[in-house]
Length: 640
Image 1 (cartoon, rainbow, N blue to C red):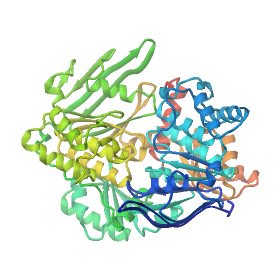
Image 2: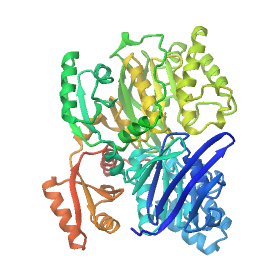
Image 3: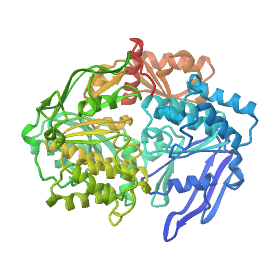
Image 4: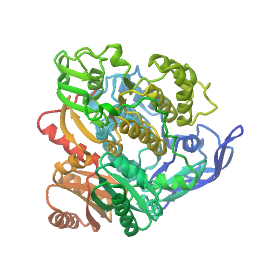
């Protein structure tokens, strides 16, 4: 990678009245680098992006992009904002032409570049489709294509994949890797820390300051902590017993395991065994793993004073008497629109006390399934069961037991936070004696104490999601549907969400969740994967991984992009992906055969393998394998 400096930031500050959002940061970003800026909501990331993009002036400090000021550099800077900023009622081609003409490009260049980028993203057959009719993933690809039309030297991407499904996310990042290899410099903000792993370097920003900068591996290593994966017969009891034990730095629950963080793994393993024995909980498995970037993020922010939202929800109505009974059920559930099957023959069961994750790409049928299960849409065929009732699911008795946080609409933007909460408390029938207590809790959980009269539409996306989540659970539903509840939410807030979700499940609620962030899906007890309207795989996170077969090989090559191109030419596209300075290859051969074969293949092309090892599948890898297998059987999701 070239060592030429692309972006230099010195003592940058930005104030909004008395609020100092950016408090004197220094950064140097190299040409051709993918640089990740990560941090919680309110850290100051978007202010930095707006200053780099020449949209807003700094209060003080120096910023240069290839030696020019941000305003002078706008001619060679592309900027993809958090909010989809293109015109919904224009077609793809018209949006591209509009942006190109704003940049004063010749019409011939606009056409040539537009079709090139649309073809790169697999969207060249949709040029006449209106932007408003695109799926979330396609919208973000179009926005990126528009940002690339002027062929910028620097590309600013502020949370570019929020709401984008795993397949589109991986395609998006493969594109960024290609652009980086061609010399383009990119600065990316993302709440998804598996994406930050794909950056060459990252900076952790908190409270207007840069706290640490390095490669993802360096940031993980800076923790000085080890991760122990613990599976037991009672995770809730295990978590409570370990939470405050001396020598344990952190404990986080996932669907079928706990992640235990400790400085001394030998001592921690002995301590865990001792505490579990004393607590009377049986250990199913105990093994060591590398810390994730999310482990590092949460631990570092805790050190610097970051706070996980309050999770002590004031529960007043126990649900445990029905624990284990079926709360949500489907038998042959089908929804057809003309000749198109949005959902085809789905069978599933979610029990009280269980968290079930429903996963799928855009167009897989997840939201349609949820709407049928909670009685909002009538099925074409099959039967749904909800809270003990079959057939018609719209009775008052059922509605009072159900909570629903919608993917697209949850709050009224023109009402204040307090007015929204009062409205939903009334709709859900929260008793008058509990309303003040529940509304106060939502404000604390959302970080909005003292701001109840703020208009909801003015809130950043992460804060709005917290309020929407709080509004959906104020009445303590026995059955809870959460459709992408943490979309755009930072890792600290996401941790708070899942503490509450786990607590509700422990108290007997049945919870069905959809998410595009597959590391988050690890927190579910069971998962169902949908493709083209059908449920094609089901089981625990660990079980689904074990069922896939094959092996994941991680490689580090002396010339990264060249190595990627060699492997992509040899293997099916879904088997090869770039993760920062490493390449992941999914192979059917065992590692003792695959690693020498891959090394020989790359050596024959003049490339040196610096490191190679087998790694455990992520859920994203599993998702892609399942989708690929389904595709071979002719199951292909229809784009929205």
